[in-house]
Image (cartoon, rainbow, N blue to C red; front, side):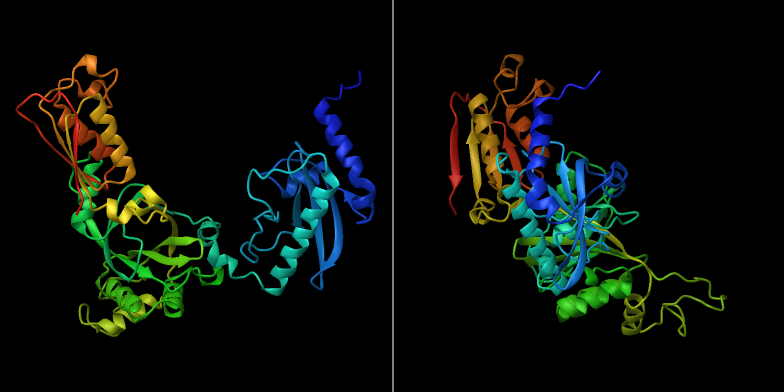
Length: 433
């Protein structure tokens, strides 16, 4: 029994037939088999494809024209054959597909020929610039997109609470089971972790923020200790080198770095764990430690120790970094008013249903400090309209608001006072300093 053709199938077939003479025939394109479609594009789904050759930028080039299942409503893709080594050219994915449009881009389904022609022209233009090295700086502009393109074994989740600005400096880090958290100093780090509701003792360690003049290019992404040093020498300053050397001298078993820079698209952070050079720690070993060789333990000059540590071929671990600082959470770095809001204090007198919602709104807006004053405890009848839920029934509203918002916004400050009188209204006092 023949398969019934759906309306979507008819539209797909009609669109493909329109491509035949003006595009596919002129390009001498041959159809791709289902095996060819799935072998190279394991993480994508294409319904049909064609392969053709040409000379682009003086270089013989093979491209695939790839049609998704919802073509002509979704745009076609073009794939370079064979895929270049990852990070050779910007805007080309691991499987060779060219990034020509942003995700979710709309195209005109009534003009499939014009859409394919335009994207083919864009593909040729991208490859011409790539072959000529004219768009290499795009790696800097979109540093965050490329830093994580190569999977790194044993990578951790790095979380930054730092002010997203230079200079290079010594900071602190807490090592969790799967995530590392960085802050300006130990006090700020322990306070933030405690605000999340965990009151255990936290051990913190020295770490470094290395601020570069501009983001790294792929060939500067460090693979070994020596690569970190090379990148800092090329893009950092004397202060960055001092921070790096200071950590190397003091490190007992490696150290962690956040590497920051400003790209044209905004602030970007990368994470690196530098390993201690391996070697025998026994004083009777013929080889000894590569750090102390030729010296008695504890008597290696600091300059020599730092040089040996940072010039070692020991592999480093690269990490992606998620920002959790005030400027990013509340303004994505584009709201200049956050610098002012972070220093403001609000006092809310009366923590009823209205007061609780106002408090939440002020917190999401980025007000730095909020104090709650109320003498009443939360009751069951309150839970239907109050920001606080059932777990706070029987607890002072002011304390409940402070505790709940502190866990939700650990970078802000909340405190409370339990009043003696009866609050029948809400009052908001704003410190305008």
